[in-house]
Image (cartoon, rainbow, N blue to C red; front, side, top):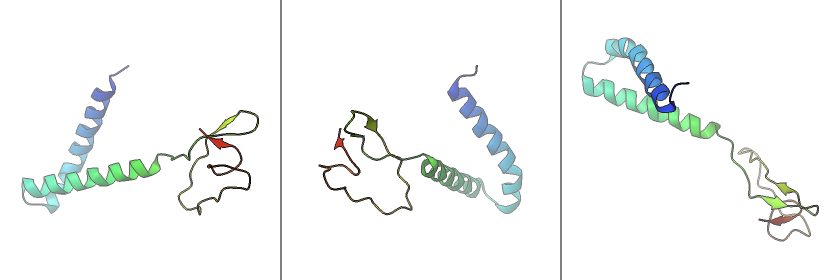
Length: 94
């Protein structure tokens, strides 16, 4: 199995090699090419970070089960239910 860093480096090299011929027709200087490539890489990282699921604070219910709810960015924030001390839903925060 290949080392993760080696795979990442190879993937970046392949993507750069594929992007250069198309970009070379549009851009004139190496600086413009580098700026364009960096802005695309930053955008790709932003999309990657947005795709990683986010989670709420863990809570423990009456049975002692630990519940970690996934956050949904488009949903409105949940209000604590009656009887809950400091966490959304039933139970207490960890």
